[in-house]
Amino acid sequence: MKTKITTLVLTFICIVCIATQAQEKAQMKTQRIEVGSKIPDFILKDDAGKDFKVSNYIGKKKLVIYFYPKDESSVCTKEACAFRDSYEEFKSTDAIIIGINSGSLQSHADFKKHHNLPFTLLSDPNNEVLKMFGVKDVMFLTGRETFLVGLDGKVVFKFKGMLKGDEHASSVLAFLKKK
Image 1 (cartoon, one colour):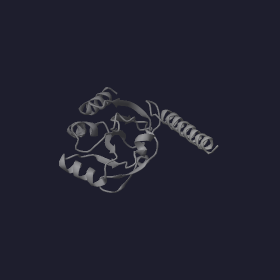
Image 2 (cartoon, helix red, strand yellow):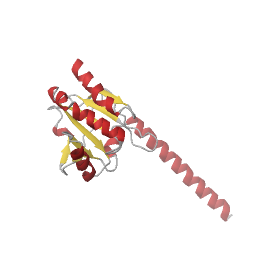
Image 3 (tube, rainbow, N blue to C red):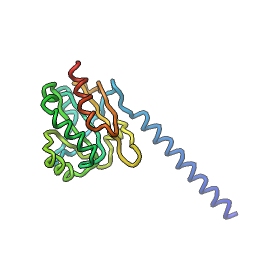
Image 4 (cartoon, rainbow, N blue to C red):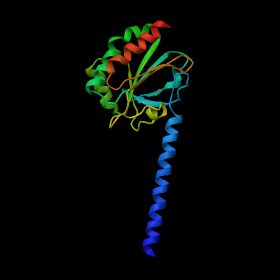
């Protein structure tokens, strides 16, 4: 009798866990930001420890928001340096660049200084904003995806390429230039 009750309780717990996982996956699918979607409002700390509220920039600047896995990793460094090297061209299109990952403020500050990055890096320690945008993990790493947001706060272009870090800047810039 005791064994049957234990089995029933464990079965119930398993069913609840499976249902919860299915619900979380369904929510993640509905939160995916696509071209034409309005971006969510968020506030994160920047590499200097100050609050960065994205709504302060909507209507004033185009936003290039790129999510990347890790400061100082090979592909992430190539990506950041590609944005750095084309920074003036982005500025000429009235766009600002924002890099986001779960790294610490200190890691971002060191990465920014080491590679002379002239743009903002934001710390998303629990990947909450990454999840709001629906950026998917790849294996054991967080995803790499770039979103171009128009003055109206809606995504007008996006680029995804896990191993194509240096192509993110050139792809977004090419899109901006043909508009």
